[in-house]
Amino acid sequence: MSEQSDRLFERLGGAEGVQVIINEMYDRVLRDDTLAPFFTGVPMERLRRMQYQFIASALDGPVEYTGAELNAIHRGRGITAKHFAKFCGHFADAVEARGASKEEIDQCLGRLATYKDKITGEANVDG
Image (cartoon, rainbow, N blue to C red; front, top):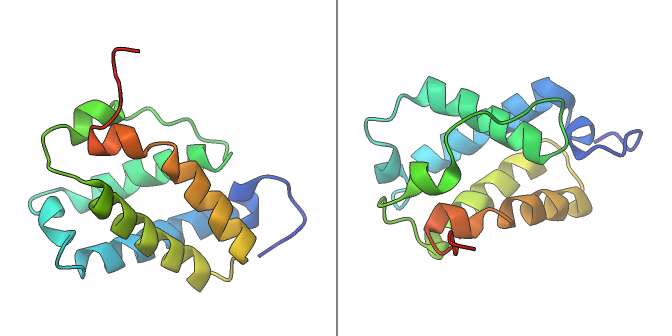
């Protein structure tokens, strides 16, 4: 990965690199017997576009996430901390496959970790 930029998004290859990571991640997720059922009937092209927007925004990219609020979109789906960790593991593997350093992978996972409670429903939404 490039050491030229301070922005994590750019160090991961910019728009093209992050899109490749998203696609690879979902290829892995859909092969995972634990996670694949969460995506049954989900329009994957739309999800990949929204996930790109979300990840790009989280990684300091020139994109603003305009999708559904995370609590609302994941509510009632039964996503646990274990599922979230597996999902993030597939993301980390996809980032590593693109040649990212351990530090960059850790930075990515740190960014995603800030959303865990909203995705698993463990967030205190009342403040």
